Image 1 (cartoon, rainbow, N blue to C red):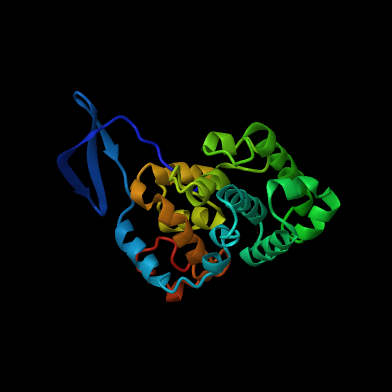
Image 2 (image 1 turned 30 degrees about the vertical axis):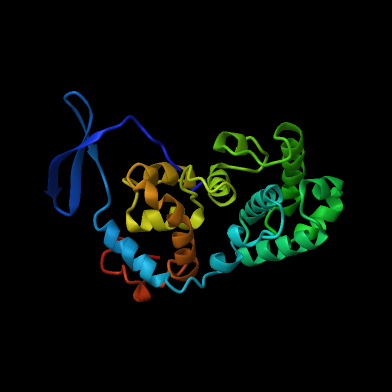
Length: 264
């Protein structure tokens, strides 16, 4: 559901950089005489470079069946944005292959605000089955579509705050919708793959319990110009190499720097 970016007060980074072991400690001036430590994971740039190398083929399921591939490119901008949002709502707890198939059926049926409002719940359920929690998603999609029509003028909200007001839309989906549908980076979309890999690599200062905690932890140190890239990069990496169960550590280029190497 990185669901990009918080711009705080302008700060001037001082010249001082200290090395303690493998961790670089930088200081940012928050105001006169006030300095704040900036934490970042050791060796993260090299790890990121290796992940990019392992993902260079762009042949994971998310690369050709993700939310940015499921809409009708010939549709109007408003319909495209709506289709992106629906695909994100369907994708929760669902493999990309299943989501893509459901989106194909929906598009053939007619996937616009007007057509979904005319579709009864039973028919909509048959179209999206077997996505995870499909019965609940039928209700969410219908209610969200009604809200988009009545409260947002027939187009999906263009802010994270507006998007998360819609039933079934959490921070992850909202940030991804902002990036894909509106081409705006508002935050990192963190799903289970990004959450898992960030913790395995030690990219969070301490272990995080859920994707939303991970999003906040990543946004604290990851340069903003990487926020949009990181979701697609890590999701595909998690689908092909850093698997939830039985990760392929022996084939991973980060095996010598990953603190979770060879752990179940």
